[in-house]
Image (cartoon, rainbow, N blue to C red; front, side, top):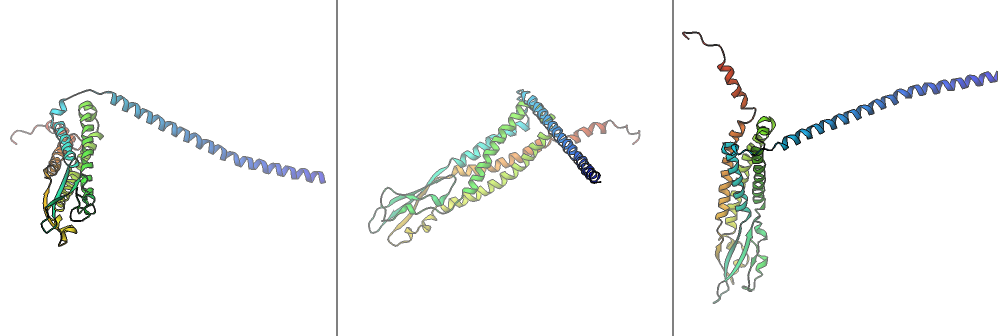
Length: 297
């Protein structure tokens, strides 16, 4: 009897182990199938990426120099935009000027000159006055101009540089990959969106820079004499001397607004290359090929 009971317990344990193994087997199979699916998806994605890279390489290798787009408004205006961007950041970023003040200490003292030099990016609050001599026992190095206009100036110059680089890339696409540009549906649309955004940013950046330039002229002009603390003393007499002409900065503002006009006008010619304008051209032959009107109409 004891042997029979022991054999029965052993059989029950073995049956339980078999059931557990059977339950675990489907999970292992499911994990194996999921791993196979992941490997297949990875392989398919890699295959798609390789195909895309190969197609891109074939398209980029099809470089053919074609100067005809430069004779059309699309390419010709892009060249003008490229030149305008150069003048914009060159006239603003390359400026250097100075403000001179004549200082005298009565009685009978001669006028002596103190100078503050400033330039791009026009942090005037860091432009201190300098003098070769000790004028009226004043530490002129601690005296600075008023205002910080670096944000507007740097925004204007940085945007002009980005436009310069984009014009180079666009001209390379127009001249070297003309067929790729006109056969593609995405490239003309991207070009059109960039053109519209650039027109708006030219307006914003130039307006901000024009306002900053007005404030720079005021801060570096005769008004600075009233703001300097040593000039408010009775023992020191200050007269405004001169300030460097800011004609090049005025030219930068003019070129900014000219660039806005160029980009706004070029938006129409870029728009004509997109799919938004092409359907209107393809619908004309269908209208012309309709049935003729009956006589007498």
